[in-house]
Length: 292
Image (cartoon, rainbow, N blue to C red; front, side, top):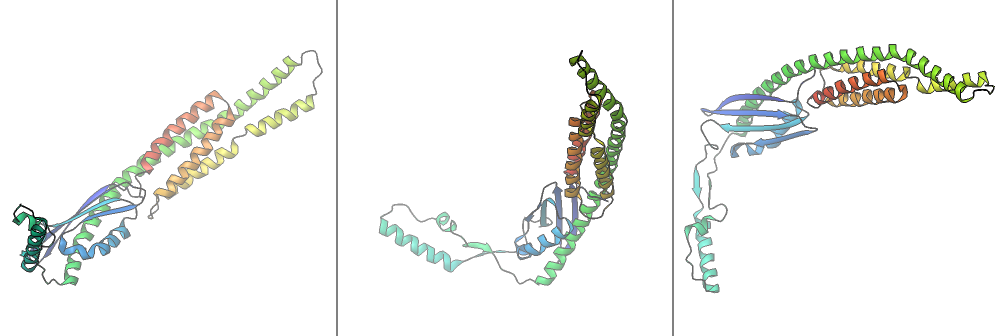
C-alpha cells in the first residue's frame, strides 16, 4: 500500500534520568530533505540520524527536533575561559593605547569574542547516547509511518474511485467513436459530391481517401494504451515500495494519450468526455504529488 508523504511522529526515551523527546514532521517534496535540530550533546550523531531517517523515508521535507524535556539544551554547565579572557583584555588594552582610543574596555567587549563563556565539556558514553537517541527516533519514525499509511489508504481509495470514473468515460468514448467516424465519412462524401456536382467522381479514389482519413482518425491504439496505463497505475497502488514517481510518470503518459484522442477524434461529444477525463487526471495529479 502506498504511503503519503505528510505525517507526524513523536518518540521518547530516558537518558541519565532525563526524558528525550523526538518529533518528526514530514510534508511532500521531490527529494529527501532532512533538517535536524539537536541538543549540542547529540551533534556528533547528525549523519547517523539522517541515515536512519532516510532509510525509512526516502522522500519528503522532514523536520526533526530532539530535545531534553523541560530544558532548552542539554545538561551541560557553563564555564569561563579565564586565560583567554585575560589575553583578550591585554590585547584590547594594547589596541586602545596604540590607537589612542578614549573608550574604556568593558565586559561586553570581551564577551563579544567566541568561547569566552561556553558549555562545560562532560564525559559521556557515546554508545549509550546513540542507542538512547536512536530508540527515541525509531519510535517517532514508526509513529510517522503509521500516520502516512493511514493517509495513504484514504488517498488510494480516492484514486481508485477516480480511476473507475476515467475507465467508464473511456468506454463511453470507445462506444461513440464508430458513430463519429461514420458521420465524418458521410460528411466527406457529401462535400465531395457537392463540390464536384456535374463532374464524374472516381468512387474508388474517394474510398481510398476516406479510408486514409479513417486511419488517421483512428483512436483505438490510444484508448488501448490509456487503459493499459490505468491498469498498471491501479497495480502500483498496492506496492509496498515507494511509487510516487512511477505514478507521476504513468499519469503523464495517460494524459498524453487522452490529448491525442481529443485531437484525432474531432467530435464534440468525444471532446466533452476528454475534458471530463482531464479534470479527473488533474485531481489525481494533485494527490500523487503527496505520495511517497
